[in-house]
Length: 379
Image (tube, rainbow, N blue to C red; front, side):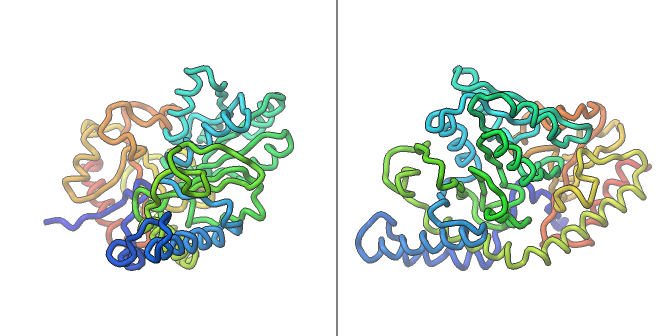
């Protein structure tokens, strides 16, 4: 049986054994409800607050500005709804490249007449046109800018400081989905003047089903989920204590090992790019992903040349034990294709595959994958 090669780390990552070790006592020993006042409940509450402090420390902010959620989707939805309902936002500026956890709630809210949505222009490789963004911001309506830090499909990275500067200049709120960059890049909230920021544990070797939302203390918003006083009345529902502990441990490890992980993963991406260009004529790279200095160092989105078997490419890779994605994992199993690649005008007769790496991958896995692709495209 072929050994599995997992190159879909932008979709989710393997749980770090040290993270699982940190979580286990909160499944088996300290299983109290963090809202209970007895000893077991107090121990759970201490674990939650210690985790909050760790995340705040990683972001250089106050624990009072960190709120736990079920993941990035809930965090994003909370911001979008609260911006309209609590902050009086009537206009939201975003882009066609955002995750569906942003685009779909915005489509719904606009359909209900709750907000006007405007899209900032994109440059040829999907970069945000900051000049156009500034033009849009000159409208005096109360506005939220919602742009992701790192694109999960094509690896484009946004300059958070530049965008936050524009938002402050024109009095707009700024929210960024940092799900793909959290733990991989330094995010210093003493330097980045931002209103809201979303993160999700399973993108940096933490558990699934838990994330967090940073809310700048100057912004007072209502919760998305009502029904309890948890998270200082900001998120009803019993806290998932083991997952919260795992989130904090995973982020702590990601920050500690950030430089070494980046060096290894970037070398994997460089090697794959070099080998693909050398062995498969006519391929290109989507978005900024082929620009090793100016894209997410863990994402390489490859546009393969036209071929009769292109529709079966992901299936053929899977048969060989190679896990990769044709776009966002949240669209897998559907036939609608990638909205991100569609926004870039990618040709329909070419196969597009996103390979995304972690520090657990090896050069040997790169070589094996390139050899499989060479057999498919070069006969």
